[in-house]
Amino acid sequence: MRRILPKLASRFAKAAGNLVLAVCCREGMCMTTKPDERETAGCTASLANAKERAWALAAGTSPDRSLLDPDLAFHGPAPVGDLKGREAFETAMLEPIRAAMPQAAKRPYLYFGGEFMGHVWVGATGDIEGEMTSPLFGVPPGAGCRKLRFGEFYRFEGDRIAEIRCLLDVPGLAHQAGIEMFPSFSGRARIPEGPPAEIGIVKTPQDPNLTETTRSLVENMIVGGCNSLEGSDMASQGLEQYWQEDMAWHGPWGIGSAYGLQEFYDHAQGPSVRSFPGRKGSWPKEAFVAEARVAGFAGQFIGTFSGVPFRGIEPTGRKITKRVMDFYTSRDGRLAENWVLIDLIRFASDCGVDLMARLPDDPTSAAA
Image 1 (cartoon, one colour):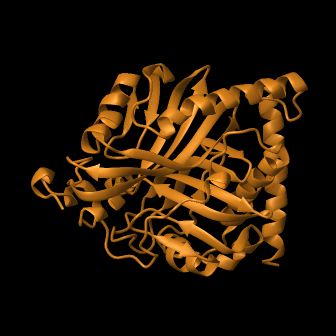
Image 2 (tube, one colour):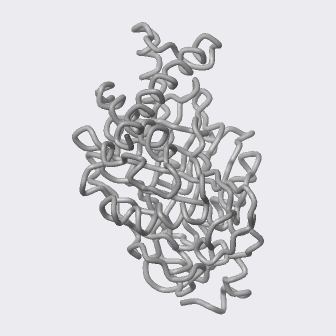
């Protein structure tokens, strides 16, 4: 019965998703499920233009101002937070990175785009690399190359980015400065690499059938798999039908990486389930696009913090949300790798714990 239920849930989720899409299209929220050739051509041209323009921000920290809408909405991680307007984004986000890492190279290893709810979105994740010569977000500078993991989604209106959703792995940057914001963890402690560029960097038009396969895999895995969890029985999700046996999962610093489903259960999902019984991932997401073998979404994790402590933070008994981003690659009809970012600093703050207080009061005098 446990093997049958996830499959039924997956089929129901896919059917429900198609119904929602059809309703949205009737209401004018997105393009039709079967666009005519003119609509398809327009969508392809718009996406190609967006990806060409967004590369300046995905792979750089000094984009032309004309790329950003003056009324830009930025939804960022702690300690930056949500911002309104292009100038606020430049002042609070771009300028601190340029000042702290003047020779930084922003290196995306996944870059792709698509349509979501009638808008063109472009997604990117990778590392901002370089020597830190001054503090960044409270983290002390130091010699040697530092890596700051980032995940970003850009929503276009015309030729400009009107909305950015962003997460950063600040605890991972702090670790490289010799400061631990979390207790030791059982996942593999590493800053992950990306796939080969020919898989992860999608700049040219792709096979729509491959794109749909990847998109459906992610949606069915979340809705019909993870969200069908029965209690703490990991096998009830039936995740093996969605993932390659040699799958890899890369969480933020404080959780770590896992290789194979058993490691994922033991070191990533299992501890989360024990802390947040009945946890769910929100669906639909704030952004969700796929292209070729790459997909990603920005969304929220929802659950009641009523179980065991999570990463050294005591349970509150209250409902919580975590801002999350997931990025995926597929291979031979199954998901192969998953890069995850979570706003753990904001989550801790919501639980009454100030992780930023674990950084030195004077980061300039604490250079590693």
